[in-house]
Amino acid sequence: MSDSRDSQRSGPAPSWWSRPADPAPSAPADGPAPQAPSSEADSATRPGPGEQDAAPGPRYDPWADRPLHVVDHGHARHAPGIWRLVVFGSVIALLAGGLGGYLGILAERRAGTRLELPQSAVDHKDRAPESVAGIAATALPGVVTLHVSGGGSGGGGTGTGFVLDDQGHILTNNHVVADAKNITVTFSTGESVAAELVGRDGGYDLAVVKVSGVRGLRPLALGNSENVRVGDPVVAIGAPFDLSNTVTAGIISATGRPITAGGDKGDGSDISYVDALQTDAPINPGNSGGPLLDSRAHVIGINSAIRGADKSDDGDSTRQSGSIGLGFAIPVNQGKRVAEELIRTGRATHPVIGVTLDMQYRGDGARVDSKGEDGKPSVVADGPGARAGIKAADVITKVDGVRVHGGDELIIKIRAHRPGDRLTLTVLRDGTERTLEVQLGSASGS
Image 1 (cartoon, rainbow, N blue to C red):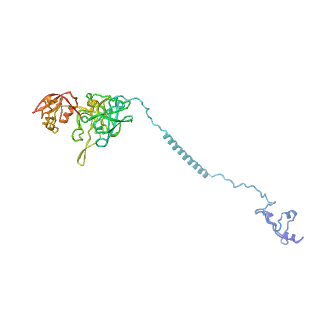
Image 2: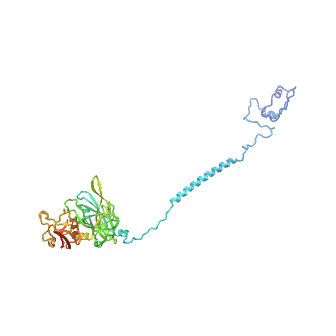
C-alpha cells in the first residue's frame, strides 16, 4: 500500500462520522490499530483539503440510534397546583364583588333620580269668597301702587290706592302725593301709566288721582264703616316697602280711635284729624292709601297711619318704623264724602262749629279760647257755635254723649260728620254742665 494509505490508517477517524455511543475497540499491544476498510463512498464523504463544515452543529450519523431530524415537542406540561387555583378564584371573586358593588351603587343613584314623593293633585277650585284668599282675589285687580317724584323734598315715594270708578279715579292718601310733580300708577297686572292729581285735602289726609286710556278698570265696592264692629276680620292690601300687592289679615281692634298725623310743616296745615278704625293687620310704610276690606271684600277704610315702637338711641326718644300691630284707617264713610267733593270741585269742605280752641289747655275736655286769631273773638259771630250758645272759656266735654279729652279729639269728632249735621255738645261753664244743640257749618279745606 502507498504512504498515503498508511497515513490514513494510522491517523484518528474524523469525529464527524464517529459513533460516540459505541466504545472504541482496543488496539493490539503489539501492532497498529486496525483500520476500517475504505470505499468509494467513504472518499466521497470526506472533505477535501482545506474544506470546512458548511454549518456548525452535529453531523448526520447513519449509524446513530435515531435520526438527527427529530421533532421538538417543547417542554413537558405539568398539572396546575392547588394554590394557583385558589389565587385565580380569589381574583375572580374580588372582581365580581367590585363589579357588583359598582352596579349596585349605580342602580341606587339612578333609582334616586327617579324618586317621586307622594303629592296631591293640582286644585283649581276657587277659595271661599269670605276667606282671605277669596277676598284678595276679588280686590287685587282694583288695587294700584303709586310711585311719585318731584315733591317738595325733591325725592320720591311709594304708596297705594284703589280704583273708585270706570272713569279712572283712584283714591289714596294726601301724604302720598303731596306736592308731587310726577305720579305713576302700576296695576296688579304690572301695567304702568301716568296719573294726574285731581284734588287733595291735608286735613283728612285724602287725595284723588286719575288715569286715562285704561280699559278694564275694576272699581272696588265701598262698604259702610258704621257697620264695623270690634273683632270683625279684615284684610289690608298695599305695597309695604314697595312690595306691591302684599296682602295681610287681622281684625278690627277698635273703632272711633282719635288720631292726628302729619305736622311736619310746623304751621299745622298738614295735620290730619282722623276718627280712625284701629286694626292689628300688619301695615307698614307703603301701605298708605290702600284699602282695608271686610269679609265681603268691601272697602271699610283707607289705611293711613301706624304707631311705631319707641326706642332709645343715646338718650333720644325716636320711633322705630314697622308694624307693631297698631294700624289706623280712615273710615270709608268719611273717605267717600271727601272723594266725591274732590272729584266734583277739587277741594273738600270741613264741618265746623265756628270757635277757636285753646290747644294748650291741659285739663279734661276742649276749652274755647278767650280770644281768636288776630285779636278777633274766639266765637265767630252768628256762627254755628254762637247760635248754639257757646261762649269763650266754655269747656266742651262730650259730643253726642261721647267724652272728649282735648281739642284734637273735639276736632276729630266734628270732622267725622258732614256739614249740616246736628250734634249734641255737653259744655262745662262755671262748674255747671249744660247741653247745647249745634248744626255744623262748612269751611273750605286745604
